[in-house]
Image 1 (tube, rainbow, N blue to C red):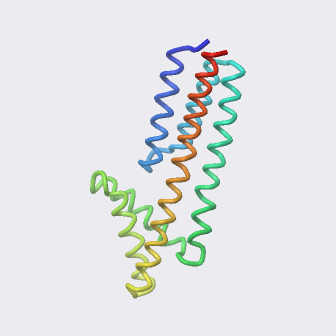
Image 2 (spheres, rainbow, N blue to C red):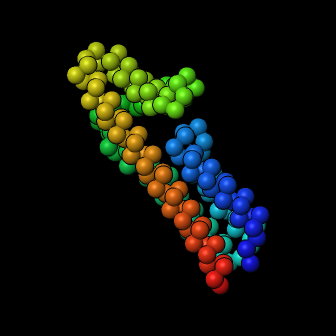
Image 3 (cartoon, rainbow, N blue to C red):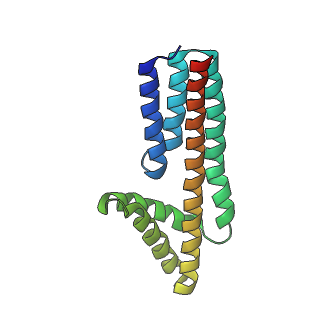
Length: 163
């Protein structure tokens, strides 16, 4: 049977994980994974364990896809260094400019690094746009996987209620 407290705690961790995919300072996928596994541990029913297994597989596929697919997109178009600098600037931007600082910091970091490297706006801006698209795709892949894992968790709750 469903334990309300376990459901609420796991649900809060899962929601925090979903928010964590949009706010890069939180490990979104890992929080969602912790939530579904915590739920399975606390409920300790075969259906809960099956749901946790499916959710973990979805999350692992999302974590792998979030790195492989965008990396293939930028391969040969943008070096790793500007993306790393963009990531560092995104974290700084998060604290300096509320709400939009992550995006502004990433763009400024990548564009600035590309301008220094290429010394040409006409080569730096297309590389920056490619990096922005890759970062957006990465976030979309992770968001999709955490939402799917959350849906699996909800389906698990429904199955526990029905069966």
